[in-house]
Image (cartoon, rainbow, N blue to C red):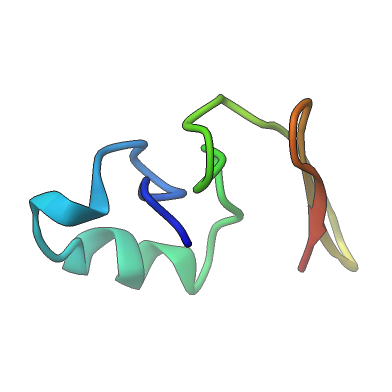
Length: 60
């Protein structure tokens, strides 16, 4: 279960994040949704990868 917004890093329990949801259509996640750690993000022409040291890699 995700507890944190993967774009701004704030709690998802605080309410909806419409600006973050709109931005995520174009941007990779910057924060881990599970532990709120800042992720190492790499953007390439074919997509992106984001790595959390605790939870591993996500690709898009």
